[in-house]
Length: 110
Image (cartoon, rainbow, N blue to C red; front, side, top):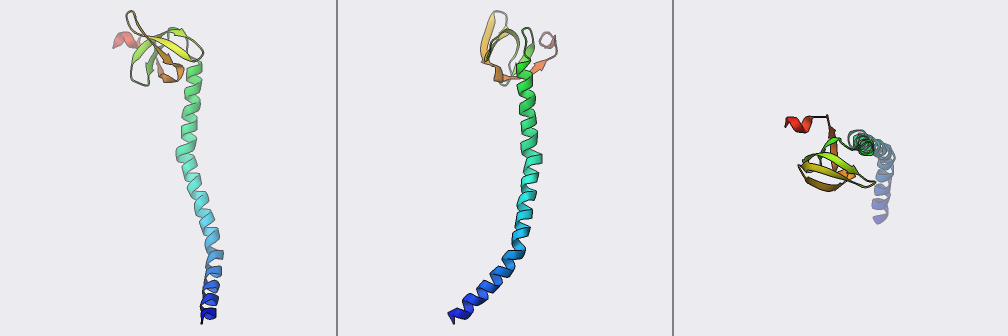
């Protein structure tokens, strides 16, 4: 009896696996493509733009930090910047903590 059962199971799985393997592979490739175009590619593009923006920082730029603090760059070093957030008040931040560069005169208009 066990001979017939194992033979029947083997016959059913080999026929189903041959057709299902290609479908499963196609589904996995499609899922990866969706993740790549909707998640991975946009994130790498944003990271590349941020690296470029951080490398182009210059003294006197008005910036906003990741914490939401507006300020003006007073000193720039290799890995950190000094940001004046009020008269005679400066903070030392990592370059990567700068979220964006603002147009000149933005802070005075606030």
